[in-house]
Length: 332
Image (tube, rainbow, N blue to C red; front, top):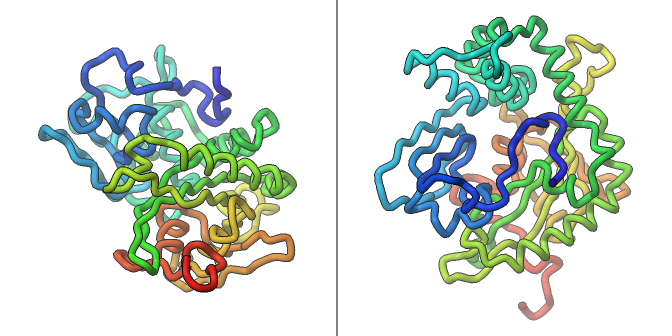
């Protein structure tokens, strides 16, 4: 079987949407067809029945009215918790055959970095306060740190695996000519960033290989309105989350930081150099390029709230970086 992220070692892996033994299905934590199993784009409009999520809507079109519960909170786990409470459904916890409270708790703490992320809301905090004793967890911050330590352990993964561990097709974006395109944006949250920096060349090569796979895909999630593939690049960021745990480990007293690793092209790097990134307080961040080609974004942690909006600019605006980059003299 495919290797499983040790942070979520009990997760089932679905190879293809047709492997679902039911005529309809629902999604949790995404409404983006590009993040669903292979084949989903061909059937999602007819077979999807419900969506439970905390991400922005991506333009999914369905043939029938569906149940949609999308909330602006830090984790889909907190949405599931709230729905269970509203429906008066018991949430099995410690001592039960399946510790569902522990699973819900883990999703919230992982998504919000122990309730320290800028995405954290009061709904997430309330859910954690109730779920932790149910799950038998006394030290939620220590437990979060253990999950991040597991996630940071990547020795068993190939560079190609690392690129795809937490990787999403993002967009559509618009370039200076008005063309729309998609990007693959991969992140790896870690408390041992130097391990990933030491594999920068191999990860960059894996990004190039994944871009070729994406650009050869005929999956509808990768195509534009005219049916042509519009995936333009693959970007990889290392997210240093040690600052979230400085309260329990003073040696982690560093600022949050995302670091772009030189990946598939100079165009990808220029998208980061030219980005409009903000920290969690809304202050502008100047990308800092290092001699080895890495680009530091000090104060950036969240792909959803900071990295992708920083690359794409203001809602509805066009990316200023020309494509191809560097520009070809005399036009394309």
